[in-house]
Image (tube, rainbow, N blue to C red; front, side):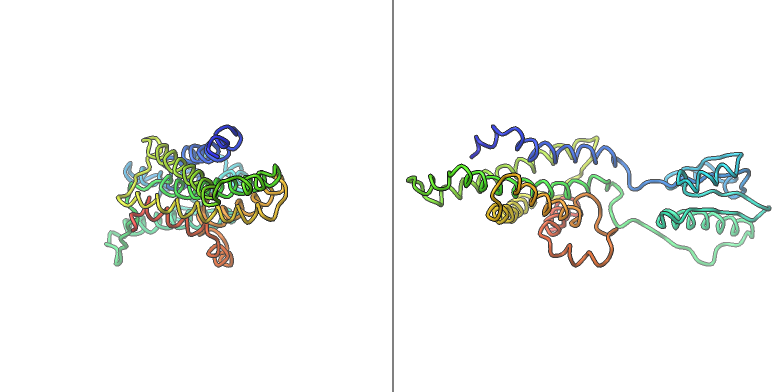
Length: 314
């Protein structure tokens, strides 16, 4: 079984190389990024922006990309086209005009809140009176957490699910088509040895995926920081492999060709990956999808891997 796997270059690519390419690609795209910045165009002189010192400008640049223009109509046209997120100008001294697009409500809310806070700070400074109320904010996560801390566990869960289910399904269909099941049944080999070998190869592949994922993700360029409980990912990967082997065996039992098995597997695993948070956070999904996601095994595997790799949970 092991020799058959490594001789099948297509299988090796889809089971080991393809998931790793997703990690490399997504890790590079979101490397060092906690979230994308909004682009705001400033037309003319805007007092609350022009009077910011370098320290406040540096802090503002973490959330906004501030551009300046002398053509307000062109800036508004860019806003309507979706090229920028907001346009701001000072119509009369002390009156800010902010125009934004409602196409992305999250960005629009962030821009409104940030500009409003600048106006309030300017009002406090103009009156010379200390503010009556203050707000202290702090991130729940450690400041060192980066996008890779969320990407690596989700993509690893998807890789485990895909590898285990595809291997078991294709093996069953292939053996049945080539009548190897009949030969094995007649051969002087105990069923336990055959089943044990199939499980052993699948577990070996899953452990290889775990080692490759962690080896790439901890490279300084990506910067995955493993918690003290990272070793618990080993039994989790083993449990996930057995769970998705059963999914693959079920699909392999009801399909008669490798093409049919591949189609059914894609229809099962890929939607499950999207609904389980392998590629993006499930918080952005509609609320009615959450109960459905909770029924999927990959959802729980992803959350468990996130807990032990990134959050230090037991």
